View 1: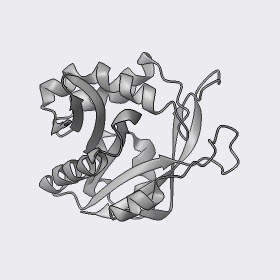
View 2 (view 1 turned 30 degrees about the vertical axis):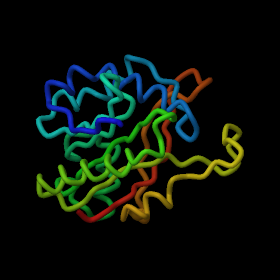
View 3 (view 1 turned 180 degrees about the vertical axis):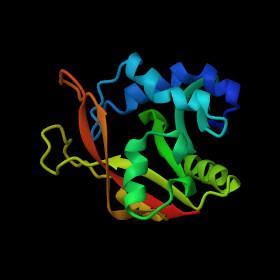
Amino acid sequence: MLDIRRLAPDEIRARLDDLADLRIRVFRAFPYLYDGDRAYEARYLAPYAESTEAVVVGAFDGQTLVGAATATPMEDHADDFAVPLATAGLDPASVWYCAESVLLPDYRGQGVYPAFFQQREAAGRALSRQWSVFCAVIRSDDHPARPEGYRPLDEVWRRYGYALLDGATARFPWRDIGDEGETEKPMRLWLKRL
């Protein structure tokens, strides 16, 4: 049995390296193809150590962090995501941003993903946020790294009550596997009323 629980603020700070390792491992796969490094991770994860309202839900096998889901108030996260929301008519101060859900492959299919969403959304409601939002990278159907039989998680997210926010696309930079430097990637925004 996995232990799935929200981390206390001091535990978030203590587990940032573990979270970085998970992000690097999980996001290396398609569709993210992230060629992660510690310097990028330190910049990206800093808001979770600094925000008093940041949420990290961890999935533990014993003492080992095997999965995590993160969320922050939108104003504590990158403007890359807040701008398209404002353009779509949503006040970023009303938005709870669910940044990522990462889980090692051996632990999938054990009910972790629904628990991640439930705990993050409950935290957003407790802060009187009206909307829960996350982003997913857009990759072409004919992308050369797309695995045979790959299916995006769109239907899973719809089952959890999320819908694409029409006309809202964010752009966020990272280095793809095999690239020399970072390039901006288009990201679709998924929205749910809390």
